[in-house]
Length: 226
Image (cartoon, rainbow, N blue to C red; front, side, top):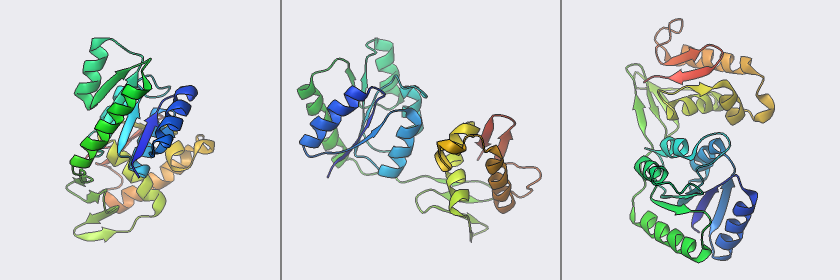
């Protein structure tokens, strides 16, 4: 069954799309914000993504950029923004189509069918392998090697490393990491991050006391520099 990820913070639009798409035989996964969308894209592997630009946490353009390089699903932007500059920005960042709200359901469903056909004709992109001078992270195999040998990581260590690697070169905030890995009720438990990052450094950094790859931004979050 074709799986469609619908990302929109308007409950009535999520409901309307879920009803119409489910009635036509699609499996529907929903997300109401950008971070949930990126998480769902990684976990659910949708065949098509429908993305609103006006999300409460991340702008839709940021979500498009976050999907770039590892998610091959075609993205249909569904937005109230009708300005040409917004359309150009979305298409240049990786969107395959752009539909302006309000929209006609039949035309929109036709665009979904076209996106499904394109997805079927496009081979999946491999998950990236990130190579550093000290270790290799294979996102597809979910493993790390150092000097040719596998490095044992706990599930939590892997989750933290994977999130940093997928956002390599960019700051990942403490709140975002805690919510993603442990859940929203843990947003104040920043000591968890320090403990697990220390463990990762001891396993991966040539000199854990002077980290080269797993960087702390005090009071803000962490960054992976390949």
